[in-house]
Length: 301
Image (tube, rainbow, N blue to C red):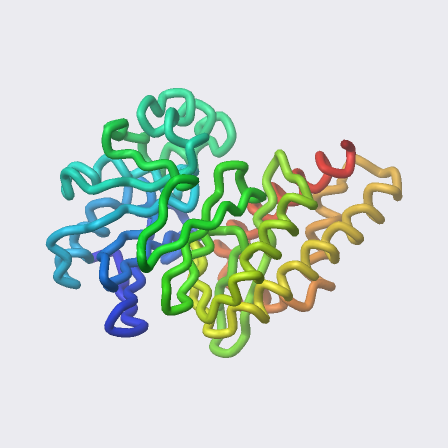
C-alpha cells in the first residue's frame, strides 16, 4: 500500500499518493467529497491510479457522480482516463481549453516530457478520455457545486466550491505543505507563462465567495481559507519584488540560485522548508526555480 487516507469529516476524504520519484512521497493529492453528489477531485497521474482505486475501494466508493479536474497537468489529471474506465459513464468536468488535450493527449504528453523529463515519464503516460463524458466547467453548476474560473497557474485552471464552504483550489492558492507539526510552508506555483494580474484576479474571485475550508492540490487542508488566500496574494507580490531586484542586479549567470536562496531565506511563509528532508528540499528547489522562471518571463514582458 503506497497511499494514505485522511478522513477530515464524514463528507471529506483526502488520498495522499506517492509517485515513483525520490522526494515525492505523499506529494500528489486527490480529494473525495460525499455530499448530495459524490465527487472525485483531481485523480492524479497514471502511475498512482492503482493506489487511488484501492483507496476508493477502502473508503467504500462504488460510484461517482462527477470527476472534477482543477487543471489538466499530468500530476493532477494524467490518470483520468484510467479512473474513467473504472467508473464508466461518470461526467468529467474541466475547462474547455483542456478538453481537446484530454481526448487526444499526445501533444500534452510530449510537452510534459519536454518540460519535466524523467519526472514526467515517471508520472506515466496520459490515457485518452471519451469526449462524450467531458463537461465544460464554464457551463457547469449543480445545486451544491460552483465552478469558479481561476486562471493563473494554468490558463485552464478551475476551482470548485461546495455549498458548505469547502473549496477545492488546485494550485490557485499555491502549494501548501507541512514538514513539521504547526510549521507550515506555502509557495507560489507560477510556471511559464505567468501573468501576475490574472493570478491576483483569480484569488480575488475566490475571496469574493468567502470559502471556509481550502483543500490544496498539494497537500493539506486549512480551515482558515480566506486568511491563507490573502497571505498568498501578499506572497505573490513579495516574490515579484525580490525577483525584480535580483533581475535588476544584472547578473544573469546565477539568477535562479540567487533568487531561490533569497526567497527561502526571507519569505516568512516558506520557513517550514527548513524541516524538509534532503530529497524533498531538492524537489522544492526544482519547483521554486520553475516558478521563478514564470516570474522572469512576466517581468520581461
